[in-house]
Image (cartoon, rainbow, N blue to C red; front, side, top):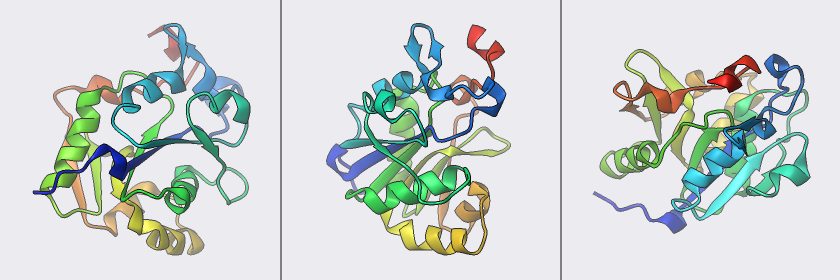
Length: 192
């Protein structure tokens, strides 16, 4: 079993969506319990990764508070894989931790579980699983997957789960604590 050290992991927080269910508001910057959503995620991961990237398509200055802002190379909001592709290109570590900006209830246990599974298995991607489905935006992957992802995107692929299934994946069962996967997608969700 290989120990994965902090300096071997970069992270990308996916914040490049259009905010359609938030009336066009930049979701990662919406406040929840006194902090922007992105801050909740950044606070959990900062002690476990070497570098934090924020994949964003607007509000660059605001996001720069939480990490190095990157913008994907594909036009027209082509989804989270575009942000992951850019992060894989710029990261200089062996692993990339992928997380969404709108899940403020994630905890360090989830991050540790992803890292531990990667240490135990010879996987390309370790991804959170709720007992029924995978939650593709909660994953730890090898940074060497950049070319594989580029080929997938060049062929018109956009679904994370489809690309993941082309790799050697391991699932991390979080069915006993589903709250860590809670997505806040609308203004009404902020009252949670």
